[in-house]
Image 1 (cartoon, rainbow, N blue to C red):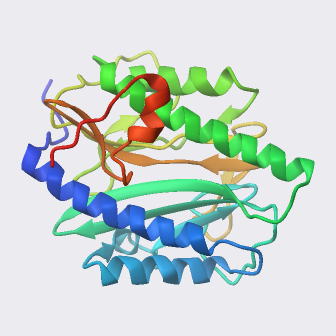
Image 2 (cartoon, rainbow, N blue to C red):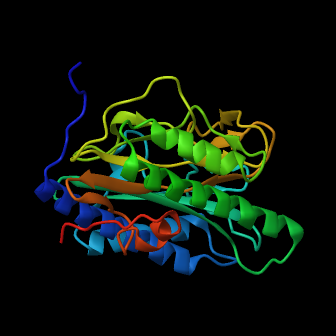
Length: 274
């Protein structure tokens, strides 16, 4: 069967690393600004300025009908939340997704964070949920480093999550290939599927993005036609990195250290193409 996606050369992966680092910088600046009283629209403006000052274009703004640089999803919103004048409160669980286009190549990454200033049990539960989601992302990346077929990644992500609690794993929304277009084939599932998926080989570039809920995985889209909300009102968390497989190993393109810290607990050492 002919591939429906493009394997990247090492030079192309290096260009994707530039886009990945600019995406990471935008998210780092957003993370630093998150505190009680800030609005998600203010966070959006920080991300846009970072990307444009860095010579990139916010690739989310290139999606038809979307006009912002980030998605900011709060509490029971899991993904695709539209930035607004909503004021963040201490203890809110916020997921921020962002991407940059640089010289024709895309980066895409996301993180979740509990707004500081609240030491309630709910805030602690939200932190645990975010930590589980982040850990499952790294478990998936570690699996990718050794996988023969792509869907081994979903098995690893699902096992990591379910070993840590009865979380819901979104099934309608999955990871994806990335390159000249932000969303390319192949799909990257966050759970076990019957098909083995495409071969993992040098040049495969994918965005892994587990999305989990504190309750049931069922969701609906709000009236804004974007925001994905849990049907039972439970909290959502979302983490994402863009990752390249190359002939010497794997490289996390949207992590400043290339994935060293996140992969260390799994005994995996990423290999940069610098």
